[in-house]
Length: 393
Image 1 (tube, rainbow, N blue to C red):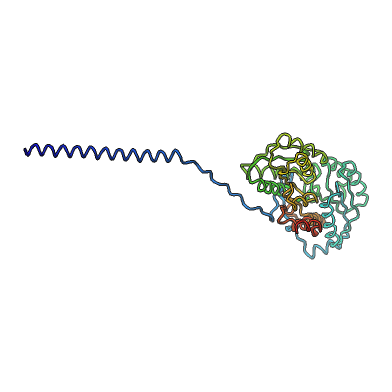
Image 2: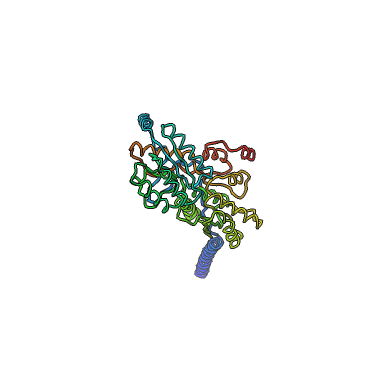
């Protein structure tokens, strides 16, 4: 009887052990099933991209000229009292040959450079305007050289034609050359000319990209309207825009690059962009006149949500920025500082001083609504017109 009871007890223990083992296996399967379900339903969350605030007061010029020379700021060119006295004692003269004086920027640069030259006793004996005509500029260089200026400031329209004119009339004389914005083809800095003063074209193109990216929410499709000529100032603006978009804004695509050679025919170029990409988010224009063509094209289609940025700060761009119109921002020149840079290059050449760089540019000037009035004064050296102040106030 005892043996029977003992057998029963052993059987009960074995049954209980089997039951407990099965329970553990079921728990493991349940846990495994739970983990598997969680893995299947969890979605990957994309890491948000951080975009820094717009830098409205950059301190460094970003441009590099066609010879690979990095720009330095005009603040790095300094004259001592002794230097200035030498200039005054020299009784030097200067002349300017512009490709155009029709825009406010060049007028401002001329006034700034002339004021500084006059303060050093350097007389400006001639100023010419070629009105965007290479043959006219060639003739004007020749006639200007009859005055035998010590310094000739030249803003080339056609780099090759200008080079030919300078070789025929200036090279081999005592007249030293300072280039404005662009240089003549084949001329070597520090050998054939003193140096070149320009705006920070690359930096202003970058400013246009940064502003456009912010305005369209850092994602979408944009197009370019660019000056399809070998012209370093505009080429650098376009390079600054393209590289900034491609390197800094992965969710923005430049879907179309439309070139033009006639600034007065940009409405047709903009029509082509909008016909092919009617839902495009934004357009960059190399300067403000082409941007006006884009505005006209968008208005004709009733596309009021188009965002535009451009270089320079003409009245149309300034008004649009102030009114939250299609043009939301620009990269503008610091014209008074650029004019001072031109004069300083001339002074260094006359004095035989070593330059920190033969390429001198002030930093870029990004312009949006919040800094529009301040930027206008920096760009033109005068207070913004009353009509612009009235819009903002």
